[in-house]
Image (cartoon, rainbow, N blue to C red):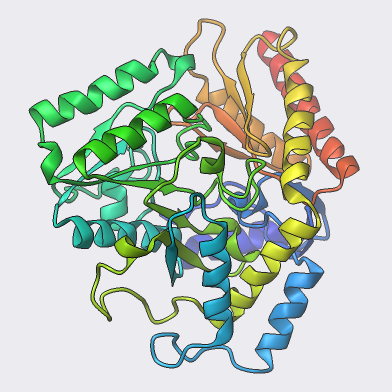
Length: 428
């Protein structure tokens, strides 16, 4: 039995099956966009830990900052005795958040915590209880964030009932026939049929839906959403957990939408692989909860905070926003060129280095089987790929923004070769 197989057997016996793994590969070491498993095999990582390692695995500057902090202290609880990095990172995020309104931040440990705390803050500020989210959205695996999530399997299946006064509207998606006007009309129908606007605390949306399939919010729709919220005193929350920190070619994806959200939820790429999340919002709103109403034992861990400060420096000094755009263009060009050859390739879309390819059968139905096969065979070929989409028929590319161009092309060559083999096998 191979080392990976032996570890997979041990994992299956020791870890609850709800924490599955898409690739039976156990990592021994990693550097930038490459992984090596327990058997010494090299893999090209086109998933970056689900958009966490935007600055690559073990970026030397991030590692150096954390090593220095390790020798000072690893935990004090920032709500008991805080530290400078905790304050400095908040200052940086407040300064960089979209819009001119003064901002404040809080730190937590996970994206789901950030989402839940954004709703707590919205309810404290507005005195209202209702929340509107969007179909296809993903906001976490805790109970309330599952209620906000608009994808059933595997995230909500078997876990209901969910909290009351959460409502879902369709997200605009031209590819699937949902116009901006239809999405906005659905919000009007929620107000008419389900909950009056005066009881809605917040509307939360992803500027680019992540788990839902990498569909981007059109700027006019986002601006109409901003106007709607302003008319009714509703807070607008942008979930930037997967889109943030240069992933889409700007520091935050909502920078491209021409709006200033009331709050943003941040995590994933914030700290180069160290567990950290944040809510950043308008100062008046963020100050609504009483002292002690927000926080967590590990919230704003000092190792993660110094990593986060270094990540922002790397983004600036290594021009990762520009690199994200170049990466997205390179991937988009390779798969767009395949569309005539691979008729199952229904769409190719890129938002910086957040790129998706969507598969349909020749009859036009979603093709989750081909998608699942491509993930598995790519792993066999030494490439880590991720799937997504409500119908499970989308491959998402999230390589580190620091990936070397030649490594990226090597990974794409392998994926395309596997895809061609799968298509040929289907045709025979």
